[in-house]
Length: 76
Image 1 (cartoon, rainbow, N blue to C red):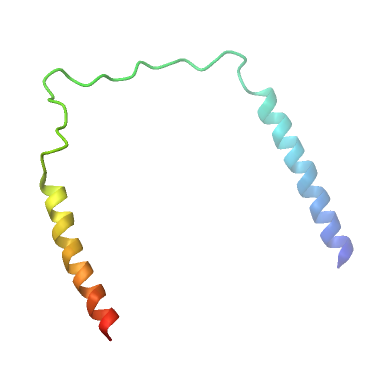
Image 2 (cartoon, one colour):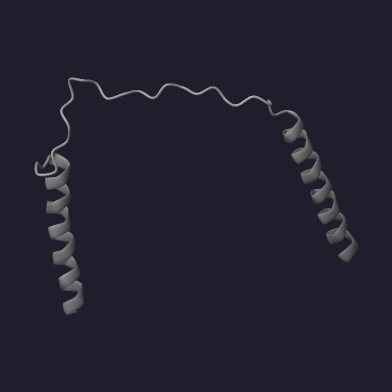
């Protein structure tokens, strides 16, 4: 049993070394091409931290119910 475990470890180590060597040989020497980052369109207005959207209000409503249930569980 011990020979099988040691043999398996050796085979995995040699395989990992071979795969690592293969990956290192197949990498291109040049740097990857940089892609231009998309800029925000001019028509979008910047986000105002004082305004609330649907997701904010929906989350707040769900958290009220969540907290009420937590209080009920704590009272048990």
